[in-house]
Image (cartoon, rainbow, N blue to C red; front, side):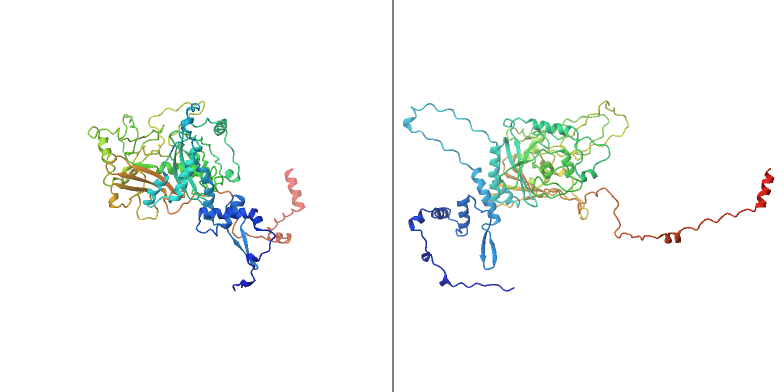
Length: 579
């Protein structure tokens, strides 16, 4: 293919002073074109961009329409070919869109009017100013991500600042008590930024009647199948009673309210998680698309859209990977009921909770004396002295701060169904076989008690589910040390802890940056095969020819032989004998 070249004679070009117009200098200065060019040049001189000539067209579009990017790209005509010339790149476009929203996010407060000294006595007494409304707590996300970056994880500084500004706007608009950046889930089209919030009950408005109507529909009759796929997978056996969801804003799977956004401008509230969504999410592996309304096309079918699937995965990650250094929280003491002839306890696990206990944070003021209690000696050796001797490099010195989700019900506490109407509770019969009870780890259990990870084709049968490392520090930073622990069962979930020597406790933060999927314990993930709907036809269909009546007679069986006729004399003799 030969390239085409163009030769332009500069002597034939028209120079600016040779252009003949009917407009003099005064008319040009008073025209709209002059004011438009003046605005563009004033903006360039004020902002001083690195490449003002490249941004000239974008500034011109902003001055005319209020948009940095026009509705259509400009076209440059070169001979017979047309070349599309984009005014701004995709990366710069996202920056411009966020900068447009940034002016609305960060609005300076109104200035206070200053009254001259001589006019203070003449004016009336000023009205008492209302106390500023408490907008809730917001963590320093930029500082947290800087610590993660020092440990090889986390987001860059500019992205962390945008998240913090966006969360500040969410905190101002919603009645929230606290806001925490949960993490970032990578999707195929656009990524999800997730915020974990705690509702302020004093500022939250009363629930509308619509919420009560939705709850009544859930308790009433269930909806029938709506698609052919749902019809084919309807369980024809006895229907199991539906496990109710846990109450919102209380200890359990719906304690926190989660918000999600893809552009860091508009936040969408995710619905409360239901046990059926958690149970269905455990059976599938599906990447997120970035569209909350997109259907989850998979097998077995998921009962909901992508927003319910996202909320279920958030609940699984949070209850499995939200941790802290040992001693930062304390679980209430459990009263063990001693039963007669009970076998000795051989495991650290316990039966499911009927009500999730609340853990309390440790405080240096309430720390008991070391000589009084054995617990104080062990706790003060690590927590009270700032975890010396690299104690946080051992997973045993980290604990879970969220209750585990039950495998059978998808809840944090067991729900007991009442007996059917007209039936009494069955009394326990001695010697009868009891149903197996699911065992879970108690609250604030250390990470060394977690189940190991096993791979089918690996030489080592069991692997530790957590990995810990320490950040490199300069000799001048020995007093402050940082540790990072990562989950190998949920890749992307991690927690850091910063400690100071001889200072009680540690600063820690949990986050998640990943695709939202659990690591497969086996080499491949094979979902269960669907039910057989019909027998498939053979690969090569068998063709048969039509037979004629003559062909049918050829293969027909021979006719039966005719019966021999008796002579007339013999028939007469037989009649006489009968007489």
